Length: 274
Image (spheres, rainbow, N blue to C red):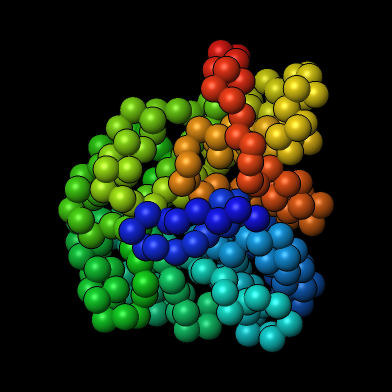
């Protein structure tokens, strides 16, 4: 897995990371075993960042159980990202304390989920970073209508990472957020690189009948991996967060990592379809 530097965090992060929305929200001992298997498969492929949230159900607890089991080779090198979704600092403190407990006392990247209460809570996250309780801060939102708020947060100097929606059907981040992140040396995590939150089936459906043979030399095996290779080729430092519950999909996602990138004419051809 090719590594990328996640902005001013300085972390070397696999360019394909692991999203956990829905896929890690599984209950019981069987659920714990499933998440441990998925984390093991990701780590074996060189994936070293796992992104969760309290709103992802059992995800945090399952990650914590897997990390604490002692059965994951390379677990000590994993980076754990999670989020806080509260409107006030007192609520944030309670939720963050719960996350620390669930994950096992360790949070590397703590992000404002959907920009909730960010003007109050982002300074608090900066305090936690200064105290050494977390290593980096971030802001996230899935809705382009919130991009103005994300930009305002970026300009405070208190966010190290942004997490944004970016795919062939949603490219508005290219107008302001991505260039600003480059200028400010902020890390860029990409949510929904394959399945947009809106029109979830639209992207893969539109690519269903595409002849993939021209892209196979680039590690592309299916429409999903084409979506990943497209974004990796578009941006030299963005880290993608696909989520999957299928072990075989972990491998096919990782297969698009590394050179060669799609050439500009192939990127333009893809974008022209949308």
